[in-house]
Amino acid sequence: MAKPKGLDEEQAVRCRRQIALATIAAVIIIAGLWRMAVWFGWIGL
Image (cartoon, rainbow, N blue to C red; front, side, top):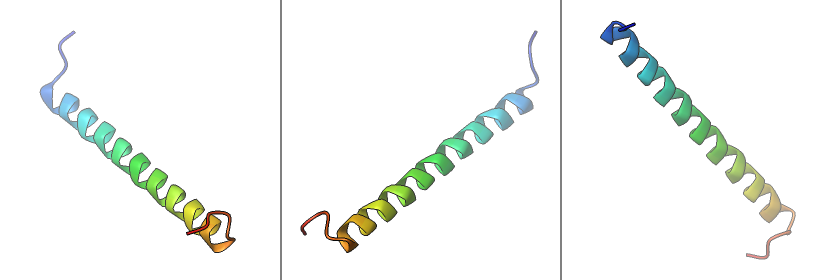
C-alpha cells in the first residue's frame, strides 16, 4: 500500500498550489467587489 515518496510530494505541491490560487482568486474578487462598492458609493469612505 506504500506509495512512492515522489508522488506524495507532487500531490502535496499540487494541493498547496491549488490553495494558493484559490486564495489569490478570492482576494482579487473581494478587492474588485470592494472597489465597485466604493465606486458606486455604497460604502462611504
